[in-house]
Length: 259
Image 1 (spheres, one colour):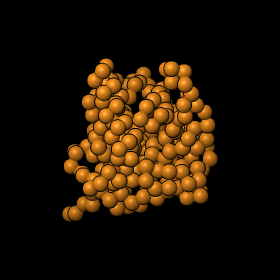
Image 2 (cartoon, rainbow, N blue to C red):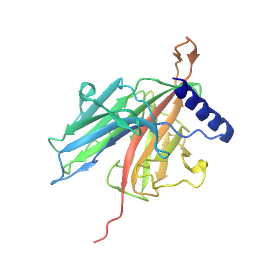
Image 3 (spheres, rainbow, N blue to C red):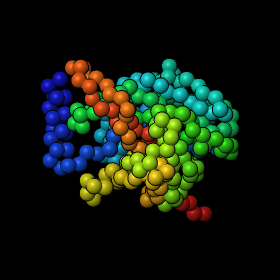
């Protein structure tokens, strides 16, 4: 316990001295986001919470909600989650069997996460999109979450360097000038940011809640649109604190292939 407190104090001191607080990201990463004939029909989904570029994990208790939406139908998958470890911290996973062509949108609502370094609770509504066997209808479907990124670009079949666009929604309405943090999932730990300012990139949506980003490298990229909630939550000591609502979408960009 003392060791954990000491680590938290060191992290808080680091952020204070550097002025940099790297982005928190809910993570929902499938083993395959484009299932085609000949691929395994089982897709493994990993749910975690981290600083993905720095590969620093945080604890993710069992989410409040974990659902799948496909062909206009919602399926509750929460009880099918199994515990695992990601970046040496508690996480969850599921092997989902793809049975028919279609677009599969997976999303989670986590339990509120108290971040003492920022004096705020964090709730990241996190989603990702898997397409299977040539059917790509429904990739732009809005799920009606408290906050979410509704894609304007198809969130699969993108090359590195392609532009991705989305609309930030809050309470079902576009969120003008919302701040969107962007990070690369540095799973192989072979990407290096030359300065701390380049670990998390930040862009802003326009007056219609639309943001645009061109990913410079193939791999998984997370987009976290951040807004302040219109409610507060109490800490264990009974203090009321603000809540950061994050609309997180994970998108994979592919390498350009040559014959």
